[in-house]
Image 1 (cartoon, rainbow, N blue to C red):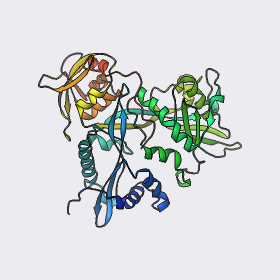
Image 2: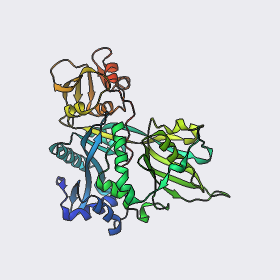
Image 3: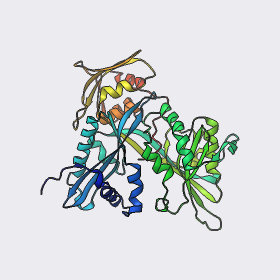
Image 4: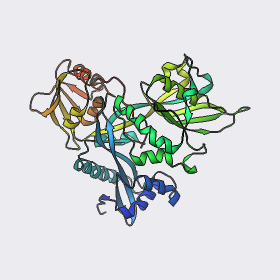
Amino acid sequence: MDTLLPERVPDDALPEFARAVNRHFHEGEGDEDVQPYLDAFATDYRAWWVRDRGRVAGNLGVIETRISLPGGSRLPVAAITAVGVAQTMRRRGLLTTLMDACLAEAREHEEPLAALFASESAIYGRYGFGMAAEHRAYNAERLRIAFRDPVDVRVVEETTAVAARDAWPAIRDRLSDRRGACVDNSPGMWHLGLTVDPPGWRDGATARRLVQVPGRGYASYRVKGADGALLPAGEVRVSEVFATDAEAYAALWQHLLDVDLTTRVTTWLRPIDDALPHLLTDPLALHAAEGPPLYARILDVPRVLTARGYVTSGSATIEVVDPGGSAGGRWYLDVGDEVACEPTDAAPDVTLSIGSLAGVVFGSLRPSTLVDAGRLDEHRPGAADGLGRLFSVDRAPWCPVEF
């Protein structure tokens, strides 16, 4: 069998690429199904495919955007999306060839990180990805929930997609200032999340509803009606909710939990240190479960480590193992008035994989946990605890929108 090689998708072939993506995700392939994506990603997007006998055998897309690091700095990131392989072409190495080409191009574009959400999380560790941000999902019993303190919902108002597109990015920037692992919405992502809303995306629910506390927070959600034995039993499906202060945050959640004719509120991309449970008299009514993590792949270790913010000073010699890439090596990190990260031949304090380093950098994994799991070798007593203090974060990493 001939080796199938990945190719960049030419602009005039993007409709065919988009239909293949939808086919591999079991979605519609008509013009009305793919045109929103073509409009959204006409720029700031790179598409790869593998073709076999005139058909798309595998596909992968990259959104060109930025990701926040602890401390609030942003770096370019290759936000990988639209990954799929035709059912008849599986287990032939197509994903590997696509991923290798994608990551090589990211290095050429001087993107020091790649990131993705995974429908099958076990796949991507082999490519050097590690968990950058854990998330929680809620399946809340609305009628059991009460806030500990009175909440004034009069600050919440409806808004339009056009107004939200103008006002919400500045609010979202505040999230990136506070937390690592927040992938910026590209213009195309804002377009898909606010402007485009065809009935086929709703799964029987309402059109997208948008509310805000002006300048302080916003929420996007749908409502799906349902009947119980005698009473309405609808569901509020929350896409996103964020606020810059406690009053606005409580008001937005009270609004979402007050929607008439519903009994449940569901959402699946909340931070693991979310304040919401601590606002309630019965946090267990949220029925928290694991949400989909964000995975990151470090491509340039010194650039990432020097861009990150630190809450304390210190130093460490870190040996990074990267069998599948070029980011491995031994690095001396020195955090003081300035941050420096240089290659070194000195004996390492710790050794860990490039995937584990992503979790440490973003603050989703403590080095001591990796020691206990056998995923970090400690060459000097106390080195892992010292590294944990150096890489500590005030707030857990969080990426509030799946891409």
